[in-house]
View (cartoon, rainbow, N blue to C red):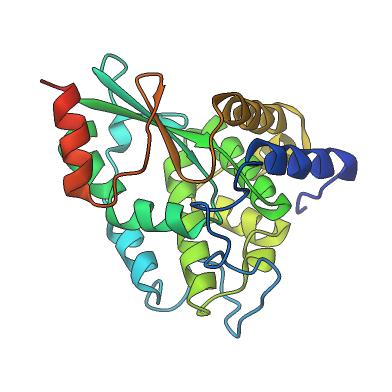
Length: 250
């Protein structure tokens, strides 16, 4: 049986807390204009990742091809526990700037820094909409089964296809039916996933990350905290990231 939102009031409180946490800009990257319309629909109805030939969008294709060092995965973190640099990435699965980072920079960070034991990368939940709040909760339920990074890929591919209008809009892609289908695709045990999404534990984790984002004064997504310090301004390219990280690893 598909999971459902059993207690609507708490979803409303999650959405409200999200807007408060991002109250300075309340936007992906501080810019609402390029965010995907969560209510938009598109002609394609395939579950993300199941479309014939794979993703049609450029970002979706990049993410699908990316290699993740899953042997170093630990819930929403990836990398050695004793890595000298820890990056906490506060992201929203519906944010186009987060999508661009995931498709074009994150794979290189994983290959050059995470896989080599230099960086530990931690995903933190910063949903700015109710629909992406539900996706964040589903993602944490995937983390409970050690499948976060597989599910993370599918969620961002779904956003890429929505933005490209080669898949359903986020309101459908991140709805209960598709989130459950992505759980099956990621290899999750279905009964445990359903129980987790309907329960309180994952919701409380997402809510806790939102409170942390608020306490840090984060202004939008993605935002990064490196070794406990908020990164002022996001590096725009991988070369920019290399300069930041290499200076810390000297």
